[in-house]
Length: 87
Image 1 (tube, rainbow, N blue to C red):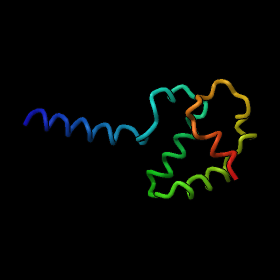
Image 2 (tube, rainbow, N blue to C red):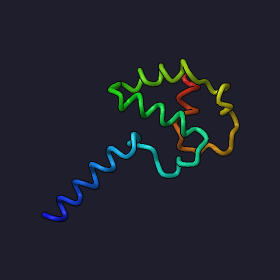
Image 3 (cartoon, helix red, strand yellow):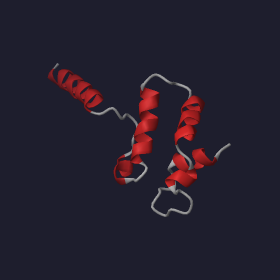
């Protein structure tokens, strides 16, 4: 019982302590973290469809505005540059 109660408290604390659910630990120091957080916030705000979220993101950001082309400091798995380049 103690283990289940402790786990429940920990899960509730983790869900309320951070508004981010899917940010990888390696992204903590990324310069695109504000964009990642904004993307997460839109999803957590109730928008389920990824296409709708990316249309909103493309209205606010572009590869040029974020200087993404040729930046070696952006992780190879980061979806933001690829998704912003899509038409």
